[in-house]
Length: 114
Image 1 (cartoon, rainbow, N blue to C red):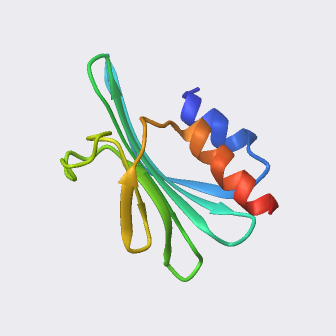
Image 2: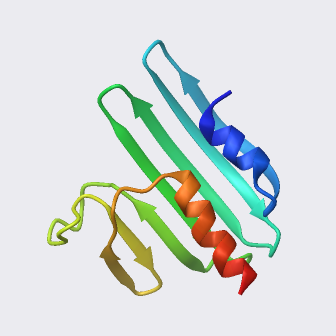
Image 3: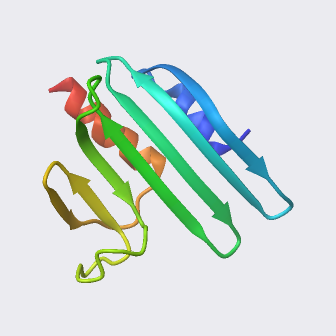
């Protein structure tokens, strides 16, 4: 089982998940998921993982669609020291280190416990 799906299925904060797209080859996989979280918010996950690349986007939004945070490594925001890694918050883009789903879920879980 993919590490991504295992993390989703083990999280106590995920109510349900839906696989929106999945492709797998000999040396890569691409997965797109939608997660419904306990507080009604949603996390959209996109990962492309190969031997040479790791492309990601973790988009967390309220139940009304308002952005809470999005971590990604799309190659824009070249002025950031952490380029291409960055984090979107409402009305701001800030530096961010490379991040994976495990770390994103920890951030979300910590915020939900507050």
